[in-house]
Image (cartoon, rainbow, N blue to C red; front, side, top):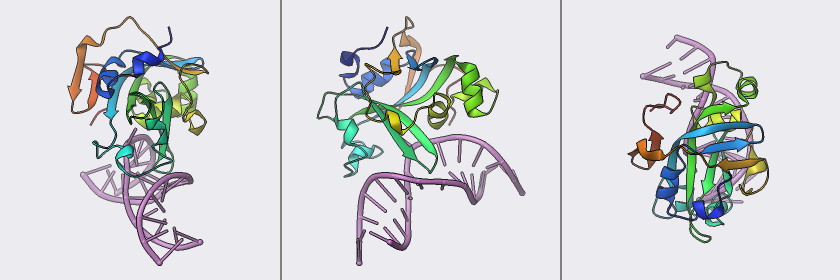
Length: 175
DNA sequence: GCCTCGATTGACT
DNA sequence: GTCAATCGAGGCA
């Protein structure tokens, strides 16, 4: 079941925690979210929204439940989910996934057969799921890209600053 | 226009 | 452990 807008229209930190265990899917390719990181607006120096940027962080101020895809370091994409209500900046960075569906597709795109290397990093998972600039500012409520609910409860989530991950999951990115 | 740097990765020593 | 790859946004002129 696809997550509704109300799920994202909450405090960024809460959404980041609750996203753990959910399924990120792009068409036939999907993975379980095992690591997230919260980014706020003006208060967070690490967030793009704290800088006086317009174009780049525009999506973060928009309605929740939309994708915020950011390009950096010349060849890397980051996938975020916009949170908070419209007008308030907030986003959750998806840092790593556990491959579930379309694994062969991922291997082909990532050019590796190592399961642990497919989605264990923010830029790796976008490559594995074929997420690019075309998904920026796109809604997760319709279209191929979406986040699915799961029965799993994020009770084992561990918090480290604004980063959340499922304790003991091997697909969590290191560092 | 020109310059700098980034929510990273992977190849190499 | 170190470092290059590589491009668009943002700052400055």
